[in-house]
Every structure is written in C-alpha cells, then in structure tokens.
Length: 210
Image (cartoon, rainbow, N blue to C red; front, side):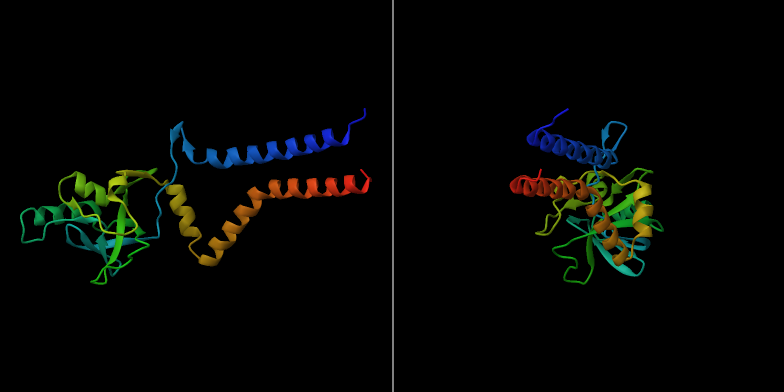
C-alpha cells in the first residue's frame, strides 16, 4: 500500500499528539478525586509545631513567632481578646501547622513571620486558621498590601496527607529541583519527539530523499 509523504507526516503528528494528550490526562486526573474538583491551590512553604499562643492572631512555632496574615484579633486587655486567644490555642496548640509565608512581606516591623496558617482538618483537607478565626467572630480582616487576599480565602484547602508525606521526603532543595526537572522532561518529551521527527522529515523531503 502506497502512503504519500503528507499522509505519513499527518499520521506521525496524530500519533504523538494522542500520546501527549493521554499523558496529560493522567497527570491532571491525579488532581481530581471522586468527581470533585480537588485542585491543589494552597502554597505551603514549611511546617512546624505550635508551642505557645500569644494572643488571637500571634503564636510561637518551633521557636519562631508567627503573625497570622491579614487578620486582627482584639488585644488581651480588650473585649473578646482572651476568648480569641483561647479559641486559637484550642485549635492549634501542640499541633503541626502549615505555613503559607507572605512572599511580599515575609516579616512585619516587629520581626514576626507573616503567614496564612493551616492545620490538618482531615486526611484530604487543611483548615485555614486565619479564615476560621474571622468566620467564628474572633478576629476581623485587615487587608494589608501583601501577597494574600483574605477575601479569596477558602475555609478548607485540598492538601492530602500523601502530598504532605511526599513534600517531607523531598525537602532537600537539590532533590526538589531534580524532581522538577524530571517531571518537565517526562511530560515534554512527546512534544520534543514530534519536533525532531517533523524536522527530520522536512529535511529529507527538501533533499528529495523521502
């Protein structure tokens, strides 16, 4: 059976395009669970264990003082201040928390780390502590000019335990970089192959050897 040059080129392009599409579907399918949208949108920079709660919007975590971003709770000598501190203490004391540290203003003028704080809610989701304090009436939003927008916060963020364990095992920056490069190479390889094959075919056609 004779196959002309253009038809052969078309078949090759279709083959690699389908392969790339299948690989992409496999990747994105990992971000969805049981038909529900489970895209990981939270950025976790580090984790630590809460050792002390200062007040309703400040805590100590492994020796580092953390200021919860974009919220403000009453001072301890103000109405509701003690209640806010107790609520935060009951929620996070002696627990591991997850920090999304502000990229624009990582520390405030007092040297405290500014972050959105999360605590494990269940095996698949984290609870946004900042938003929980606001929604529960213990704090109010103070929208500073920084990375986060408190009006876009969700109370629960998809962040499965498996991902947490994976991040813990690849905390080394060199290992993380190698993993990222490997991921890019793996999923871009079909596109690279298509480009190489098409370039080779065009060269052969131009020379009249194909």
